[in-house]
Length: 370
Image (cartoon, rainbow, N blue to C red; front, side, top):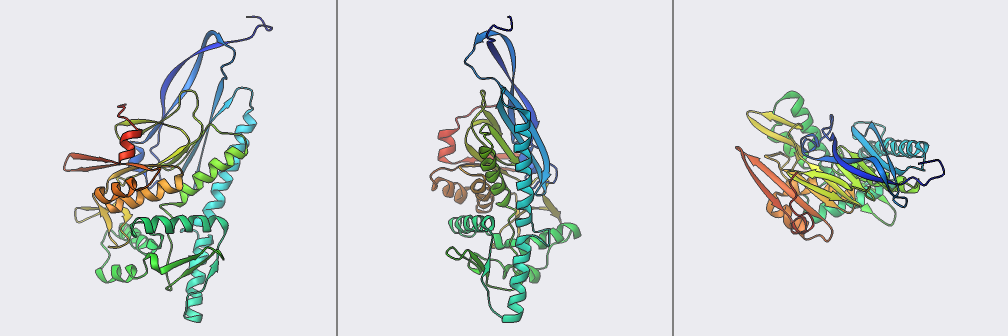
């Protein structure tokens, strides 16, 4: 073909397992050994159609919010590499900013400052005081309250004192004492924190309360990343933050995501995976998950692998934690009660596996073995 001839290509598409999402430093490590994204690439072979757009693929990754964040973009060939890089930098900067809002490891983060300030005011005034929160904090608090009430407290961000207790148990390899568990449990409960939507303020009803956003903040960050990408004109995008995944418009061969033994083809939806093969503590022969039941104060025993799809990553993230605590019967019933969510739960014990799926999972995702 000469320079003046229209170039037209027929593409043969090969599915290639580009990466396993087996993330270090991720609370979702176990699930990531099972949850992977099959990306596609294209090999031009010979002339066929001038109208079919061609795409180039870009991938970026960086450690943010305590996990590996991976971005995948598909841009048309007439779009520049600079566009991909500037979009990625904007997204990573946003992750970093949100870490300063939700991190419970950074004493200067917004949530740590709010909890400390609340305790100080309790000590000086002996009462709960309403504290103003940022827009990002308000959005996550609002969804946390909704999911908490929907799950009857199985998801509760006030679980922070218990999470800290179990972190210490892991380091010391010893169970918390019953008296210490009871003391920390007294600081946990949906009724102990209040969000005023009109004034966008938060009040904590006891001193020494600690909020933990480990089961929802990364999902929110993924949603914000999608918003940022769209503002930059990037719609064919996958964002993954340690197992909280959301995909936009599909590239030509789609976004393929594995859930257990199934391969799902998704578009404009989020999926979250939850499991605890790596994040656990084993004491006296019993394995306790990193996911703590807010009502008992105990890390889950024999916690399942969970996959949840939902319109937003924030919702999928929180629901995955909630139904892990609720168990198969109540968890699947909760998912079935919601309009746009689906779930799959896999329990393995003594070499035997049981799989539970919601009605919408069965209808939307027909069995498709890898």
